[in-house]
Length: 224
Image 1 (tube, helix red, strand yellow):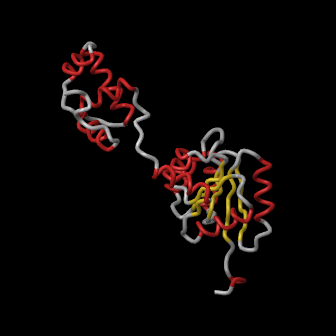
Image 2 (image 1 turned 90 degrees about the vertical axis):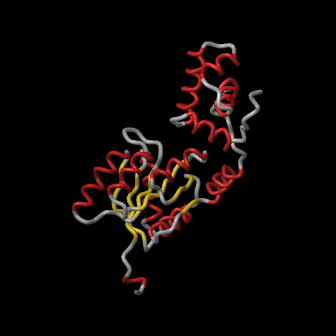
């Protein structure tokens, strides 16, 4: 197919700052193969407008999604969009470079992640990439994810006391035995174990023992 017969990539802009939307729309309007078909200032309004477009078989190919917005945040909106209309690709466009923000957007279904200081040409290239079924992640974002993979496992979610407790759990101690070792009541020991499971998103002492092993905490350090 000749380029002149190819349909442009349709794009929908979501950002609570009008100046950002206008800037993106102005730049993208100069791209021959990209057509901005709608805008919204919140995630909820974006979904409402996309529902209208879906009724006329006019859903956009790509949504550029800000992450921090009132009413409905970008991740929540991304999740709903990609679940209701899987053919629509979402690119997160945000100021945040933190690993948890990146993972949150990707877990919600985003196919791309760009920072707001990205060059305009990079935004256009990302739109083309995700429209073609690829993933578009800015190099600095990819480095953040790579650094996270290389980072040694952390026990940061647990306090020093909770680390003591999980080691005793790993060694097979009961709540009563943990209480005796630490000089606390059995109720306090039970509370520590419950807090650990809640913090780590686990449901059993066996899972806690496996978590400890995965994070370099070895049975026997408790002085058994």
